[in-house]
Image (tube, rainbow, N blue to C red; front, side, top):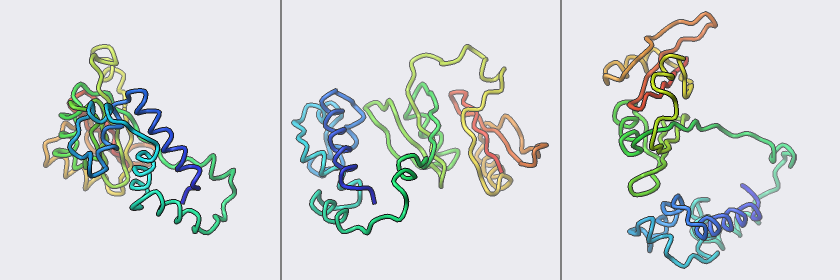
Length: 209
């Protein structure tokens, strides 16, 4: 478990984001039952003291209150890892896909590719996250294409590589779901097997076994 000082910094960051008018904080404020029905704009209009930010951080850490989180961190046994290793460790990477409609894109990944919608920020959403098992993709709203027309297809750009233990089985699933498969299941010279799916915004996602 992280040290209490880390949680304190996270709470102060929430307060700063609220003060700066960052709409992404709305979904986190709604984790508090008393604010569950607020819109993002209403959440930003709230008075948001540090104590409420600490309450949110505690909930996200799996505790009922800041006091419980504080007690659990103080009671946690010291880790055997070196601080240097903790500070420089890399946990995971989350590709960000640029899309014209975050809600529609998230629905596509859920309904056709079997992902779960983790969150959607904003009303209408301007940022979101979808995941399936250990793979997570973030979705960011853009109002105009990031690449020149046809460039992604012409250059064969891959926006994300997702590893899977059974590419053939997943390929069969996506065929049945009528996904836009732009490269069939292929045994590559480097030894792996992969296929490529394109989403409605033209983002090519490679599934690699």
